[in-house]
Image (tube, rainbow over all chains, first blue to last red; front, side, top):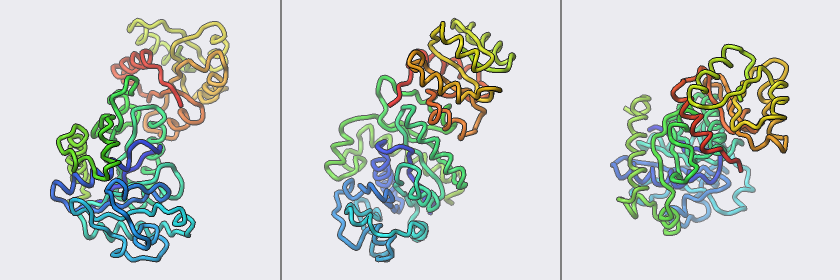
Amino acid sequence: MPRIAIASGKGGVGKSMVSANLAAALADYGYSVALVDADIEGATQSLLFGVEVTEGTTLHDYLAGKASEDEVVHKVANGISAVFGSMQLEALMEPLELERLTRLTSWLGERHEYVLIDSPPGFERDILATISASDALLIVLTPDILSVTGALKTKKVARDEGRAVLGLVVNRSGHDHDIPRNELEALMDERVLVTIPDVPDVRDSVMAGVPIVLSLPKHEVSKAIKKLAKKVISQCKSLALVA
Amino acid sequence: MVVDDEEDILSLMREILTREGHRVITASGGREALEKLKDVKPDLILLDIMMPEMSGYQVCKMIKQNEDTKDITVAMLTVKSEEEDKIRALDASSADWYFTKPIDVTKFVRSVRWLLENPPRRG
């Protein structure tokens, strides 16, 4: 039932990778999961799951009022219900009713135990629509000050909209000048739920079109994502977002 | 260098940082800080946001726009949980870091040490 937006202030921090793998990990624990690729201008989830999406069955078609909920939900690996964005440039030219995103996530929330929303980066209309369509946020960032600045903006938008922040996911860690975890927590005034190392295997899994949690379940990245899944479950419980 | 218009904060900071082995210079306002920066190049500037005459944002901007001082790490002192201040500090005035007041001494000392060893790089 809880609808969780996976957000970041800055693009390129690995938000989509975290979303896809978190969906796979939650599904692995036996939960029914829906994943919405709401990164309107940079949809990539279909690539992460190795799925080719046909015209008329994308989130863009739904937001343009051309398709129903049933028509845009695709069953993918681990029984995840995924709504993919269109990767066609023309789809972006269509007038989209972003308000319909809330209707879609509510519809999915009535049918699934967790709804994950892969949000767009930045602070335009798209991210506001995503936050409105969610109950809580997970903020993904990399351990550098520019990423912290973006993450702070996302936190502010979340707070202004009255949404809870479940915590921080630190991605691409393990470099010399990384801001340490305790400094990140002090800067953001939020808890770091998990730290994910920067390893080439993640890029390989993207190329292969299978989330790393499924292709290499014992990999350190997969272990980190599974730990994140457990923490998300317990955070949702403590915030009374789930029974 | 610590820049704050409150005498108490200056002496507290001086005491904490000196005890940790840092050499500390202070300034009670933006103008005084900019004047002193013509002669000294500190490794780190701790800059209060709320100061009369010139705000910390203005002072930071001038430090970051000056060729001679732009590479000095600047950390702003903001009031806890005001995201807008933190964002404005990092974004508009190009500060490198911020600390929230009231200061947690143990964490502050640890962070200063880390900042001096790992000056943040932008871009």
